[in-house]
Amino acid sequence: MYEDYQSCIDASLACASACHHCASSCTLEDDVTMMADCIRLDMECAAICTATATLLSLGSEKSKELCWICADLCMECAEECEKHQMDHCRQCAAACRECAAQCRIIAAA
Image 1 (cartoon, rainbow, N blue to C red):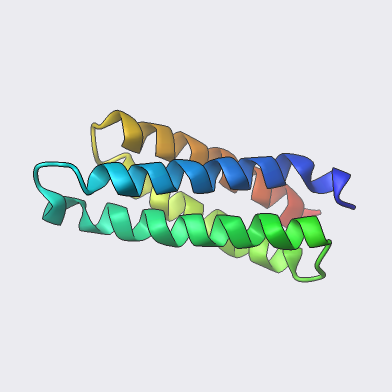
Image 2 (image 1 turned 180 degrees about the vertical axis):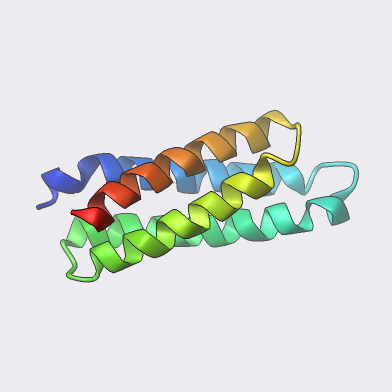
């Protein structure tokens, strides 16, 4: 089972890392208040991606359900990040979209 989920686990961990980096980088922007939604979604997305990777690694029966939630939150985070022009936001959005795609594959199986 674990091997079947490896692509999703990798995408989830990469997304969590990108989200952490984005949130941290957003705090250094000139107008942090403008970045508040981005920072919040980055932190939420990182949390759900980490949880998803963990449950997939454990072979949890709840993995598919969590993958649906993870995909939804990743897409919400990607859409927010795409509103901003910074490299860290663009990289985060790409990682979120990849994670969402991988999660949907697992959830639909």
